[in-house]
Image 1 (cartoon, each protein chain N blue to C red):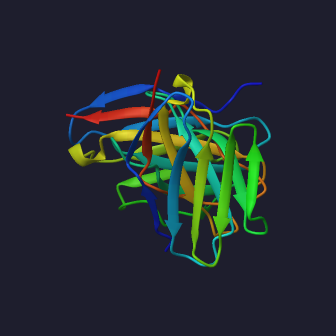
Image 2: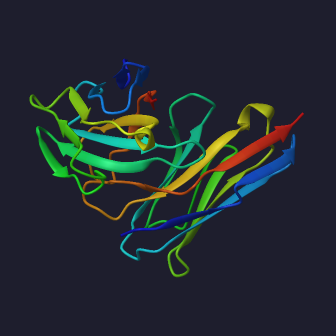
Image 3: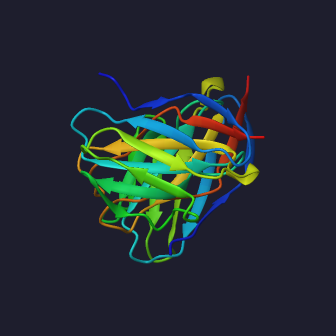
Length: 115
Length: 112
């Protein structure tokens, strides 16, 4: 079946602009996660949704970052006033229920470049 | 919070040899330890995982061991093949929501 889908695959934006990154999880998966991966490093946790609500947003670096999942399926990660340091691959993952018995399935990511 | 250290950062082996990657974690409450393989420009893919009630798990050429007392776990790949070349990440989770903390990755190169 279809895996986790992320759009766009690449996004180039100028410093100071606003961007939205979209994640379409595997159908029926209630848990959705956003991670950020810088070059040569492991993915870094940003935020976790269980259904429509953000169950843990402790990984968001500052208030320029925000994410929503209004209908418990598609999620959008929003970054305001982008900075060059925001350049990274943003990965989305979903799992059936959350919890350790539900492995995470990752999308291909969105490569964000802030010039 | 959880901290995961991974070694080595790069590993080069001859085809057919074994490869071992080691990780340590800091949170004694961590109870789930997956391993992901990431090829260049692609998504991380789960290759094997282990839970804290088990000391070892094997799947064909891949095995993972867990030492809860020492807080470390390892990935073992036997009879390596060129297609095993990739970056491997270990991770640990102690939360009900299964948020993973990842290690820094190991670039494995298998020479034909």
